[in-house]
Image (cartoon, rainbow, N blue to C red):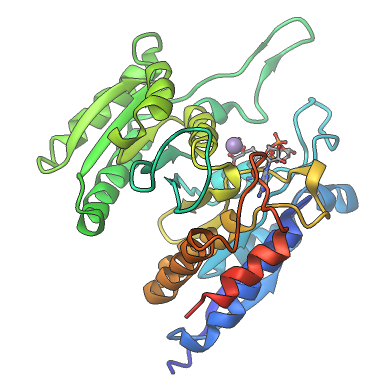
Length: 355
Ligand code: NAD
Ligand code: IPM
Ligand code: MN
């Protein structure tokens, strides 16, 4: 075995975060012997609980550890009751990690897995796309900077040429690499509101300029409202979607709603030389500590992390074990998105099917 270790930071987070990261780390432990280098984990505090205890959502030293790690596994953070004087939530890490570390690409695969009962009458294979959410500008550029008073507040949506260029090329490259494995595409759909907002017209213009360098990638443009309908009525038309920050936030949870819930949805936040992986959903305070949360989102976030570390066979083994546990009925998901026999049972079922 190559003796160099992979250094992975772990942020358990708030609410269901600790139980989900615990589940994913059990999967990681079982995989350790099959990895090309051992994973060494470092636990970091971050989130609403940390804010309550220390006055900051994450210390500068902990952020630096994320920066220097080969990858970070993060649980959901935030508690709706823990707020800043301006009224927004105090325990979130998006501004600190996504903007602070310039992790500009938020990659959110939406894939219907075998055996999962959903509200839509879709079959596995018919919902299998990736939302690439611009992660550092858009409407979220206003985070912490809204101006106004108790009668009116303005939050500014910022789109830059450079921010649009790099996310467009990230999505176009991703479509190419997906085509190598899916046999579909490559195809990128730009989702925007360029009919109404000048900022979005710039986003679209820069996307189309860059798409011209990728003649092998089919491209199209959809307005976000029409995209919301299409994600429910014709999800099979999508391969890679690229979109503005807040639109990507909303549409990725919508996608989750079509595949059995956000508890099936992992995400990766990528910059040039730093990345972290998390479920797309939040800390689900109403079900926290009850062994009810679906651990699949966090386990699939671990799979994305393993791919990032260059441990593709282990990542594939994780995905196969999750699919097998669902396909053979060992794990069933109730209509509210929670596993019928609990988080720990679902995790054990995945562990039992790991090669
Ligand atoms: P949420 O995603 O926590 O919950 C929405 C719904 O989905 C709830 O019904 C919840 O029970 C359910 N749910 C979420 N994850 C689940 C899982 N793994 N298994 C089964 N059901 C699951 O959204 P919210 O209630 O709007 O937010 C709660 C807190 O989380 C807030 O503080 C919010 O700001 C924060 N948040 C954090 C992140 C993050 O850390 N990346 C993401 C979204 C929301
Ligand atoms: C997400 C979350 C965050 C976002 C919140 C918690 C700030 O909803 O990662 O999707 O809006 O980006
Ligand atoms: Mn969200």
